Length: 180
Image 1 (cartoon, rainbow, N blue to C red):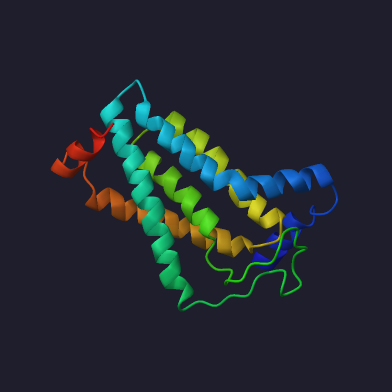
Image 2 (cartoon, one colour; image 1 turned 30 degrees about the vertical axis):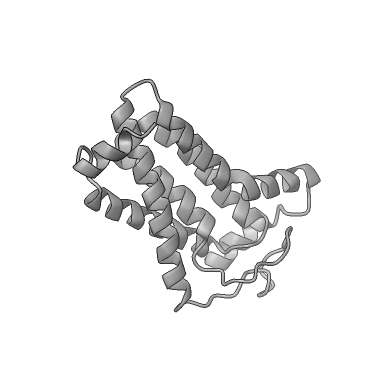
C-alpha cells in the first residue's frame, strides 16, 4: 500500500510544469516559512505569554524531532523511492536514507506543539502548511508515504515529550517568554 500510494501521488509529477515548480518551491521553502510564521507569533497581541510558550514548545519539538530522526537513521536504512523505480524524481537526489522524512517531522512537530497548547486557529493554519509540505515531498518523488507517516509520528512524539517536560509558567518558561 505504501508503494501504491506513493506512486499514485507522484504520478502527477512531470505532467504540469507549473504544478511541479510549485511543489518544488513548497518543498524547499515550506519548513523555513513555517519557522518564520512561528517566530512572528512571538509578538502576538492576544494572550502573549501563552502564545510565546507555544512558540518555544514548537521550537523545542522541532529540534527534538530532528534529533530523534538522526538516531533512527543509524538503524533504519530505507532506500529512496526513486532508487527503487517507484517515483519520478523532480529534484537532485538526496544523499541520505529515506525514512523518516525530516520535512514531515519538522512541520508536524510544530503543528502538534500548537495543538497541544489549545490554539486552534493557529494550529489549523500551520496544519494546512504542513500537509502541503508533506504532499510536496511525495509529489517530487523524494519520499514514500510511509516516510511521511514515520516523520509525522516522530514529530508528534517529540511534541508530546516537550509537553510533558516543558511546563507553562515554570521558572524557565517565565524567564524565556519575557525575552524581547
